[in-house]
Length: 177
Image (tube, rainbow, N blue to C red; front, side, top):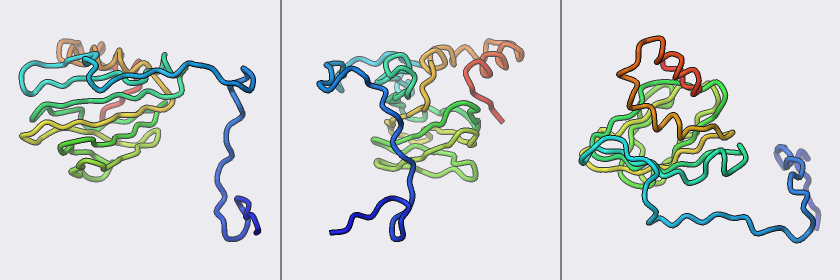
């Protein structure tokens, strides 16, 4: 049996694994974090049936900056952010239930359960729930950033001056076009 190495004919090249970061020996350690689906949301934005809830599944703080993973449950017609991009982080969306309108930089698509959108750094994107039914999705940011602060303060944007809004968005790596 012949083993084909990456980059050899018949096998595409791919990046190597990163250098080891765990240097604690050969036994590993107990450090996993379990969060049941029944855990209360960390943030509720809005009221009534159109409210959006955020579940901070893995924050930048809990992953040492590797990534941030959030479950976002949107009520019917909850809306969402308009077209924007990030200069420091990539973002990915995975629809769990319902339908979510995702902007891929060229067009708005209706994403349903199981659909995924990856947005590299600098990629234009947006999302919203325009449907009469609730929707749920996962949002992944890499590398991790303190997005919790952004989610918790976003509802105050309308009350900010133009300068305050610009500073807030810039501080949270969100550039609206």
